[in-house]
Amino acid sequence: MCPKCGHIFYVDVSFERRKGTGAHYARQIKKLSPLHEEILQLLAEYGPCTKRRLGGLLAQRGRRISGNSLSGRLSELLGMGLVKCYRTKVREVDPETKKYRFVKKPVWELTEKGTEYIIYKLGLDPL
Image (cartoon, rainbow, N blue to C red):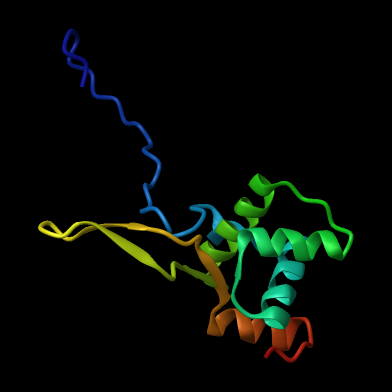
C-alpha cells in the first residue's frame, strides 16, 4: 500500500525454497535433456558420486561441461525427485551448542523414482 495515496498494489512474490530442495522450476520441465539422461545413466552405472566425479566421468565420455552447468542439471534432477543429495561426514565445531560443519562434499544418488525412469524410459538395468 502506498503511504501517500493509499493505493494498494499487488506484487507476485517468487516462491522461496529451502537450500537443498532443488530448482524451483523443475516442476515445469516436461522432457529431460540428453545431459540429464546421461547423468542418470552414470549414477545408475557407478552408484553414488560427487559432482567432481560425475564431471570426470562425463569428460571420459567426451562431454565437456562446466561445473556450474552440472550443478544446475543436478539441482533440476533433485527438484524433480530423480536424485537425492546427502553428505557423508560432519565435524563438530562447538560441543556445547552442538554446531557442526560438513567436511566431505555432497554425494548424489538415484532415488526410487530415478531408478524407475532409468528402467522404463532408458531401458537400462541399474546396479
